[in-house]
Image (tube, rainbow, N blue to C red):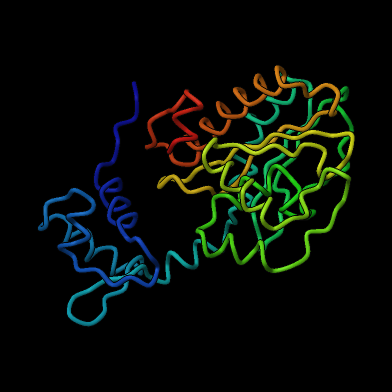
Length: 265
C-alpha cells in the first residue's frame, strides 16, 4: 500500500515556491493565489511557516523567505545535488554510447565540471570534477552562454580576448555572437575541435522549473568517430537524459521525451 501524501506539507512547500525572488516581499493573499490555495488556509500555513522561521514578516503584512531556508541551503550545494541526481543517468548514457559524459555549470564566465563518467574504451578526455575551462570554446560553455540574458551574454563576449586553442577555435566576437544565437534556436551546442583538434563534443542544457538552464550535459568523442550521423544519435540520447535529470530535480515537471520540445521551451 502506498504511503498517503501529507497535503499540508505539500501546500506549505507550494507557498515557499511561490516566492519569485529572495528579496521579494509578498502579501499572504498574493502567496496563496500563486500557490492556488484558499486565502484562509494559505494564511494559516504562512503563520506556521513564520513561527519556524521559514518566512519572515515585514511591514504591512508582507512576507519574504526566512533565515531557516538560508541555513538549510548551506547544508547542500547545487553541484552536490546535480552530481547525485545525474550519476545513474550519466553512467547509463556513457556505457550506452561508449564515450565520456560531463555535467557542468557556469561560474564567473568559466565552465566548472560537476560530474564526469567515462567508459574504459572511450576516447581519452583529460578532465576532472572541479576543474574549470573556458566557456567560449566548449560545447558545455556555449550552451550555458547562449542561455544568458542578452546583456550578460554580450558582456561576456566583449570582456576578454578569445584565444585560439586550435585552428578551429572561434576567435571573432561577431562569430561567437552569431554562434550563440544559433545555439539558442536549435537548443544544443557543438564543440567542433575548438578545444582539442582531435575531439568533438555535443552539449544540451539542463533546465530548471521555469525553463532556465542551470547546467549543461555533454558527450565527448573523437573527431573521427563523431560523424553527423553519430552526432544525431548522441544528441537524442543527451536530450532524453537531460529531460530525465530535470524531472529528478523537479518531480512536478511533466516528463518531456521529444528533444524538439525541450529545445523550443
